[in-house]
Length: 111
Ligand code: FES
Image (cartoon, rainbow, N blue to C red; front, side, top):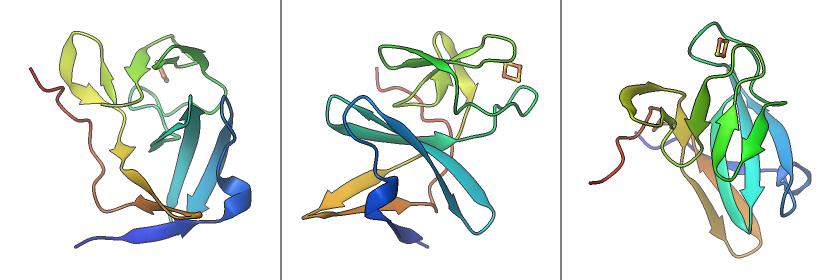
């Protein structure tokens, strides 16, 4: 079942920015990299640290606690597939942005 939720405009990050978005029990970090929006769980799958303040290197986000790095597009750790942070599709419809909170899992990169 699709769980499409509109992101309030003040929570949609500007280019180069990030924001925290809470909905029900979910806490998601939104990133805007060069106009592309990414959404991941704020909780690191290793020990649960907040990923909001993690350092970005391109699309790789480094957890501030112990340094694991996650690809924002897939949620995966480079070269370690099947373990990673949950990601969520984000789509723009006109002026509005929506997040699909029903599809949360690390995505295997396509070969
Ligand atoms: S809590 Fe994120 S790497 Fe340990």
